[in-house]
Image (spheres, helix red, strand yellow):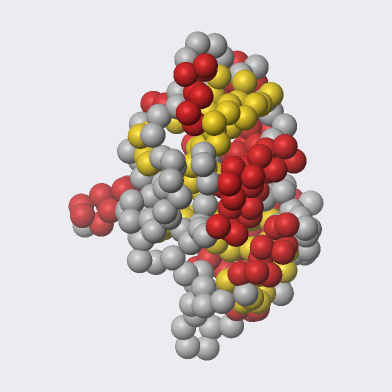
Length: 285
């Protein structure tokens, strides 16, 4: 029994530690960050840099920003700066040169207080989870979603009435503020990412339109910011598989859970949870 309780506590802690996308504890820290200059770190990979530049210019609104090559960051040793770059998870096959890694293993775009190729928890401010299969053409869509996720978090968190509203549990329960966005959206998943047993029916479990599609169709929905879709993706590291459902338009977070790294497919559990979110959202309208 003790082992079961400890395991449940561990899982809950893992879930709480990743779900809010930001490490701000006080409103004063958020207000201070709003006056910070964001340095978007560019690396020799042209596809990566071009995608990050486009995503920041289109979707980042919370702070001012500028772009800098990773070889010229000595200019930012003094001053109110934060740094945006990418951290790849352990075991990742991403061969892009110049990207970082994290002590708290994650595959994500990150924002840190200081630039470092090895990110430690005390230096981490924000993160937006990315999929694990990133090739040259994928940077456009991965950077778009990550920038939007982090910007959404900040724009929501800054509205907190008191510091307690920034706690992990509060942010998990209330972010995003309008989950009714999920009600009328079609849920799309990459082919072979849906795992159901026996006679389980996806449409019934989700209580809505759902379809497995080519990854290119998900990319199109992100590119055109199509408000009629929400989509499922996961971000796996050495310890966890983080499962997310976000809207194709503006990457609004609809659902998040964290499980073992060998359990990354969307199952009946996720579909039932999404249905429950819709039911609650309709009651609160």
